[in-house]
Length: 221
Ligand SMILES: C[S@@+](CC[C@H](N)C(=O)[O-])C[C@H]1O[C@@H](n2cnc3c(N)ncnc32)[C@H](O)[C@@H]1O
Image (tube, rainbow, N blue to C red; front, top):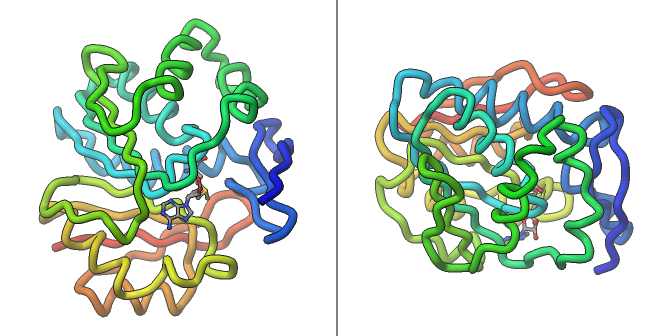
């Protein structure tokens, strides 16, 4: 499918798919959305954990991975990060993304590059506290059990990929989380919430990022 680089309202870039009228991030601000949904509503829950295992559903541009890495450095955490992605972006697309500049992280450029150039399917040390495994597979093929503290559920929206927001997928997510683990997502759709509840998740509705009234956090309790 054809892809276009766009600039979202906070100045950060994203990728737009005209055929679906869908972008990789919120048009109201890719970086703002990532911090709100995944860091403030997700990672911050684990403030007292020294070691955190994170699964990202849709590694895409690597934005969530990079900001999590930056937070890991700032907070001196130890993070094992696994990102699942069936359709990796091309290097020519990645070089057009402005996250390093927008995040004022020029000194960390080498880490952003390492996220993208590291080999798929291998455990890579991005630095001594942050390991990354990029998994080239479909979400349906995930078979981890009780492994992750936190899931960043960042699939394309239910409008364009409804098959990813159903019980079958959330069951896979539930099984891959540890008890007391959490899944965060930008969607607050009623059918999504009900599908999560039906596999055992306890749901919290939280304030959404700019441009969205609500988002969901699902807990395995
Ligand atoms: C909303 S975008 C991800 C945004 C990403 N988290 C980021 O920060 O750039 C959704 C991602 O899921 C990937 N994807 C779509 N369907 C998939 C599937 N069935 N299995 C694995 N990856 C899929 C897409 O290629 C895309 O990169």
